[in-house]
Length: 459
Image (cartoon, rainbow, N blue to C red; front, side, top):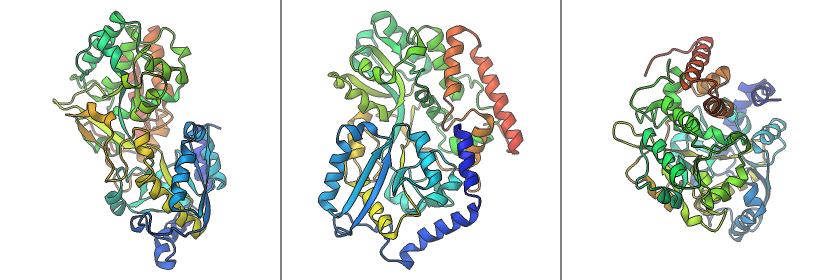
């Protein structure tokens, strides 16, 4: 069963969605009025409230590396120093994207999970609300990512900035004296790496598949620096894949990959890339750079003895003299709406402690989630850039981008990795020009807009 059909199954399994969503929403928001034992997230005072609470809850997540290296156990032990009677069972799930959807459909997953790829309209069916979006926006960054009808259902475990992880020693050896700020500068830098070092200039991570979805993360920041573009305008854009002629826009995001491949600035055989192996390769100076979210930075640092050589830089596109950096939440903690009142309370305490006190976000090199969190050193290269977080979809259009992504089969939010692989394949073999690919994307996009009855314009 593929992802689309599974999501359709989830949708169908909530046949009484209106009733279920209403009961979940009303039950959650009214809980503090009906049962004072369930606090609001914003009202919990860590270290003072619920220190005597007795509960056993389960948390499933995708961070199998932190499960295996003892980090998760250490976090739970630190939590239990403050909350000794709340037992936390954790499980790192290897194929989390798929497995979590299956567990969600059965309801057999525990009390806290990271939200998988579901439509926003399904959030009230499965998850307990943390509070209104307005309330949560005062507490955390990126509160709107998993909100529906003005209610927030998710809290990211860390934030990601979207840029490029690179080896500073390789760049220096190649003779690159400044961080590239335009596509032309970046391609020129990759050529210097090829000419002056033995490193692979740009490692595509083609074979892993999912890693290629990172390229989709830059559409918002290269479209006039408009924080409303991605979630409010993109679905209405009649021609989002045309060349603006100034090195910006989605067109030039993907053209960087096409040109790098066509010019021989990637690995010799893209079909044999190794996701796990690339971590030590970039640490050891065998790779110049990779297009990945900042979540990958710490993995590259820890993959060998040369962690100090790993840096993180903004994506090389500048709009009207300004280089923008997009940031957003990674996987979001969510609480099972069907858990007991006691377990929901314990889960709220646990999630808030993980967000505010655990230090996990900083350990991973993540952008802070708690509003009072400190900025990690990894983002020092972003000095002078303007940080931009995509604004939420307009009311009534919360699922519009999901719908057009699904109908067009391009999937610019998740699962569209094959379209990025197509760019590598076509550039490597010469089977298609880049403009051929963009024209095909436009046709699929426009057909989906027509089918869905979306009002279109050109931005």
